Image (cartoon, rainbow, N blue to C red; front, side, top):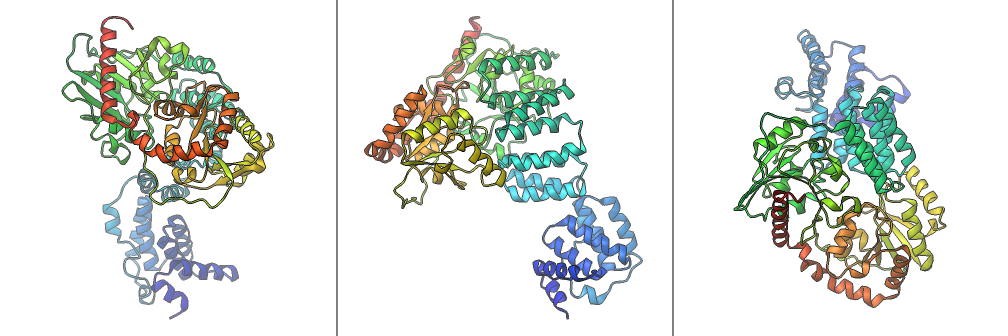
Length: 623
């Protein structure tokens, strides 16, 4: 038995690939070699390579039964079912080669009948989607690439790959995929607007806006394309809130219409029991979903019925947090605005609350109409409160232009999950004072870097640790050096690759929030590790949730500053006062555990009172 045959027989596919790759460099591979190389690729789940090598072998020699049997099964596995019938028919005229069959381990060539029994559309795409649902990003990306290798003109494959890369914050990689998609589909407005999203997340706002504008001009009546532009505008630090409102009103004018149905919505009147519908599409389930589910699960079922309308079944892994929060759940992932309206009306909803805001296009389209007697916006951005049939905007703070609709609760209405201190204490062995910051390219605006530069200049012996958001990629690291170099502080910046944000914050002394940014969980991950985290609200035009969380917690009064000057002076005080930092570290964990912000039952009680007040106000025609 030859060396290569022994490797095949023991399923050492990496070694099989190495030996045959070396052989191919010195001369042409035989059909038998190509077949074995195909089996090696298949063993490593590289199906396109397996198909390519097997097809080459078949072209050279069409009477190898084992090869033909393998090709028939492989074609079914990757979705080329009609092609598999050809190979299966050819197999009936062939005899097996015992010398070849003897070295192929049992089960390596899949059973054709078994493969047919599991047949489904787009099998490789489905494998990727399943991996993505379980946050197995590398596997998902692998299957999406395999799908695109077989079906390079299939749009859904590109959408899935882009979504996967976005989820990993690999926006530069997403740009590369989008360039390929746009070359294949140059007139597709959706790919153009997705390129705008990718560029926005890289902080390349001018290029992003050009892509958005091109997409809107190409598809002026595509509300989803236009909505991506609105979301991009909200992330652009150069735009004022008034400008964002202006663009939102243009979207409303173009895409929101009255939706009528056969059934009228419920009517106002005295109620002892309220049915409350929550539009959950667009909510970031991994970030705020756990706390929404935790708080809402405490609602009084004798006074309220909570019904959720969201993407996917309630058994879907991303929706698991909502199982105890809602008595009923409606899957609206494939539902248009008209159908959603009819579902809400049929459920007899009294108060309808949009939790997704600008993240869900279909939700926004509904609010040109009356689906329920009381309609609210309770989302991370207030901008869609200007929709014509939104009665109230629920938020901790509110922009002046929306004050007439503002509805407050006694408790903070911001959701952010409380995590525990890491079990393994991180011990530092340095004597450097480190500021730490977790900010993406979108948040690393000139306002933010200018603010942090002032802090570093005022405290010359300090450095700044940045948590990497794909910053080690060559182009990204070069862009970072340029950004911080403009302010003369590039040499005082260090990057850290850390998947757990708590472990990252434990490496620093004081955390800094960017001038823009909306992630409340960043605040909690710093505080739970005993690290003070400071916010400047002077240019916080969108009233970020991170500051709302800070303002809602106990013991954080000295962490929020309303001017740049106060922020710089305040950080210097934190640097100088080691005793204050140590005291905070010792007391903070206990302070957080006892904070009203994490008392889910009390918060829900306050929310119920808020909902009842909204109903009464609407009944009294005061809205």
